[in-house]
Length: 301
Image (cartoon, rainbow, N blue to C red; front, top):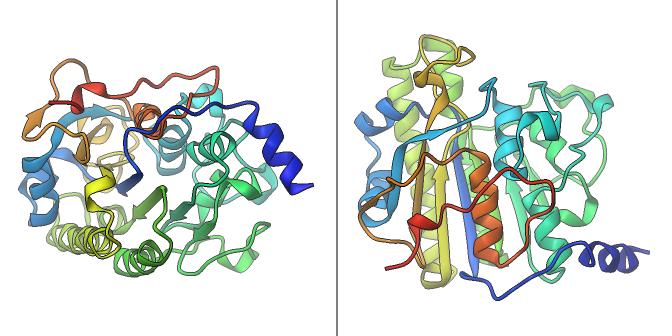
């Protein structure tokens, strides 16, 4: 039955020659662009210098974690994916539109996919059992409901990165998404721009460095493309108001095929353009309807 389902899904998606062998998307939850540029983040700033970037990318409205990440990983606006809540509500079910994971697996069932996250509400993005080879939130989960006692589970960035790093070295995934929650957590508790949040930026950068080390250790560096972005920014102790501090997000590409030292100028990427870029890199056709467009300016030369 599982093989039949995969074959049926494969008929709904097509694959061309991939532009890179491995795609890693790393989301730093709550990464206000102004603060990122000032933060002690040597790993991230190295990727900016060696890759292509903009501080003017934008997220959806409302700029909340789960809806924003859903757009980031489905390629569609909130009106299409319809996840407008921001907590784990199992009775509401999973996202109803394809994700980058399900679409990539439908086109190329042999590839390995992974989602490592710091917030259990990302479970809403595991829409098909076969879409992910691992869903990890401080531990690997089987497909199915999450225990009610874990509906607010929060896993710090060092633990997320360490688990992801070990898995990357072992499995060498073609598509891996890693979510680091600490900046957002510190912002809500202490405020955006607070000393405590500055420390959280450092911790997330160290986690980013751990992931980059794992990519090197796995022998994937020359055939990998890394995208670092965020779901939203923040101001004071929130991020819901439609203001640039909240809605502008970093978008950084680094690795195989990426233009070096390039600042994106042609247009402001939207968060759902990340999904479009991931599928484009993997040579996978996007589903229809689809709002995202690949950020091709970041690549070539």
